Amino acid sequence: MAFHKLILATTVACALSVAPASLLALGSGDDAGSGTSEKPTCKRGYIYSDKKKRCVRKTSRHLDRSDLLHHAWATAYAGDFRQARALFESLADRPDAEVYNGLGYANRKLGAIAVGIGYYHKALALEPDYVLARSYLGEAYANAGKTALARTQLAEIGRRCGKQCKEYVYLLRAIEVGVPNDW
Image (tube, rainbow, N blue to C red):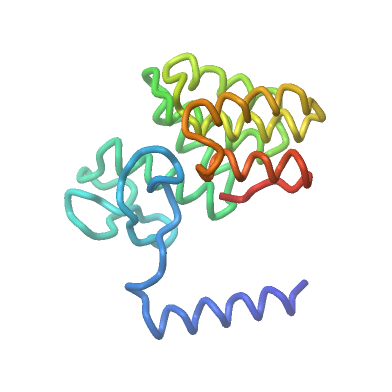
């Protein structure tokens, strides 16, 4: 395990030294459904500010809701699900489908599948056409062994964006192969 971490750290260090601007940002982008463009990933304790166009301290007065949402998704996609959940919770002061989807994602990844399912339902109550939330909900059902419910979400995604959209393809893969998607 330590050897794999060393290899990963070396790879990341090399990538950062060669082309830091070309690294893909983790976070919302089209994958998270917010429609924001890709942004750089910031070091721990910092968050990318759209307003300042750079990384700023998380406590900075320059942060807005979209910056925090981007950071929450970046944290979730980086695998820090507890921190991501806390960030999404800090944004849950008003009904927001993307925040509920993020809370569903973080809770599901932490093993609280039933809690995650509840949040996905809240997201879909606000935005029934939110296919990413439907895909994540279907994965949660598949993880819980509720394949029929997962296939219901797959059919809904197919009706909304077709069988070629990535949400459909990823959920189909999760159902048929039993492999959860880390996207």
